[in-house]
Image (cartoon, rainbow, N blue to C red; front, side, top):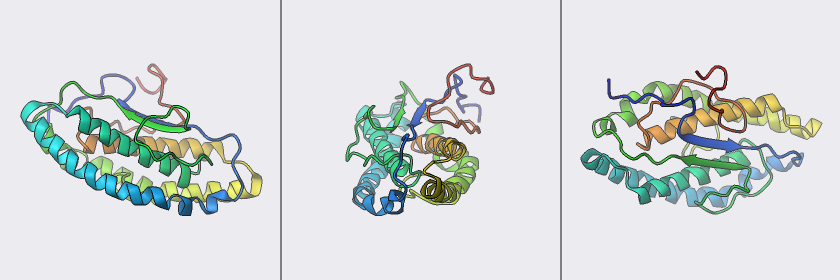
Length: 224
């Protein structure tokens, strides 16, 4: 598997951001999953379309080595929308209701982006999503209760930690920073794997828990 592309820098080309609100309502977390239902209904349709378009993109990569930009931007938008709903209703990181939008919104406390590649391997497209990603699927399934963080918004270790954070918030009015940072690391890992499985990048996701609200800065100790 010499075609497997290494990460060319210390930062993987999937940007997952999430900033904890300084003040969160003590009990709103109990109903956020209900408030998020309209989003979930829309996301079901969007993910069906995304899966179909990913197949189309895969065939195009196999013949041309390129991921069609329109499909790429749509899939990034679906991932971004899903991540915002996760951050609101599962990670409980904000009380701001997520926008019904595929577009980037720097003002919202959670965002996601993927760098569009100029070219992709025509051979890796056949094995990335099912064979090469298997070790990561095992890890991500432990984190979120499923192989990739698509419509499985909650579950696994992140769901347990979110429950602990919610109870702590209700009792102390404070979201434990250590839990939040750890959850961000797990979600960041999961979305990197999702982008790889959706054929968006050739760089193999690192087996690394990059915790905290923002992506690590190049040159950070431990990333060399």
